[in-house]
Image 1 (cartoon, rainbow, N blue to C red):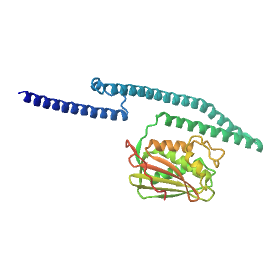
Image 2 (cartoon, rainbow, N blue to C red; image 1 turned 90 degrees about the vertical axis):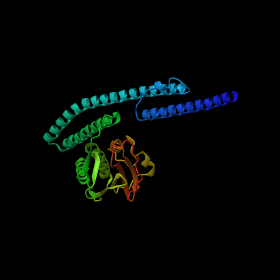
Image 3 (cartoon, rainbow, N blue to C red; image 1 turned 135 degrees about the horizontal axis):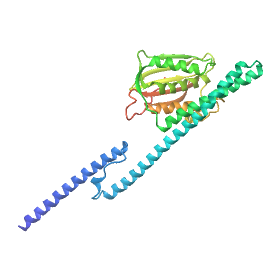
Image 4 (tube, rainbow, N blue to C red; image 1 turned 180 degrees about the vertical axis):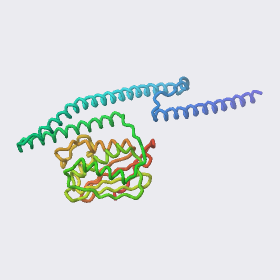
Length: 313
C-alpha cells in the first residue's frame, strides 16, 4: 500500500506540475496579447489577471512603464495642439496686416509714374508676397506636425492629377523657362488625398523648375508595380553634391547649390505628406540631373507599409 501511495503522490505531483505549467503558459500567452494591444496604441489595458503569481512583479513594472508612456503621449499631443494653435494664431495675426500692405503697395505701384520708384515698389510687393507664402507654408507645416491632418483617400485618375499639378507648378513659377514631359500608363489610378498629395508633387515640380535650364523638360514618369505606385520627377539640373543628398529633406536645409531666395521648406513638406500616405520620397542623382522618386502604396490606408526598393529607370 505504501508503494501505491508513493506512486499516487508522484502522479499527483506530475499532474499538478503539468497543469501549473499549462496555466503559466496561458498567462504568458495572454500577457503577449496584452503587449501586442499596447504596441497598437491601447495604453490602458486590463492588468487585473496578473495581480498574483510569479509574473506580478514583472507586470507591475510593465504597468508603471505603460502609465508613464501614456502620460508622455498625452503631454506630447497637448503640446502639439498648443503649438498648432499658437502658429495658427500668429499666422492669422501676420496675414491680416500683410494682406492690407499688399493692397496698398499694389495701389501705389499702379499710381506711380517714376520708373525708379515703380521698380522699388515692385520689389516691395515681391518680398511681401514671399512673406505671405512663407506664413501659409508654416501654417500647413504646423498642421502636419500636430497630426491634425486627416487624409481623405480617393481614387484619382493619374493623368488628370499630373496635369493639374503641372499647371499649378507653372502658375507658381510664371517666369520659369522650363516645361514638362509626361509619361503615364493608360488608365492608371492613384489612391491618395488629392489636395495634400498634389501639394507634395507641386513642391517637387516647382523645385525642379527652379533648377532646370531653359528648354530642358522636367520628366514626369508614373507607373504601378508590385503593389505600389512609382512616380519619378527627373530634372536636368546637373544634380547636387553627394554630401547634400542625405540632408535634402531636412527643414530649412540649404545645399551649396540652393537658390538664394528659397525657404528650404518645400521638399520637407513633400516628404511629410508622403509619409502621411505611408509612402516614401527619396532623391538620387541620375544622369545629368536629380530624380525625386515617390513610392506610394496602392492601399495607403493599410496599417503597415514598407516602401519597395524599386529601380529608378
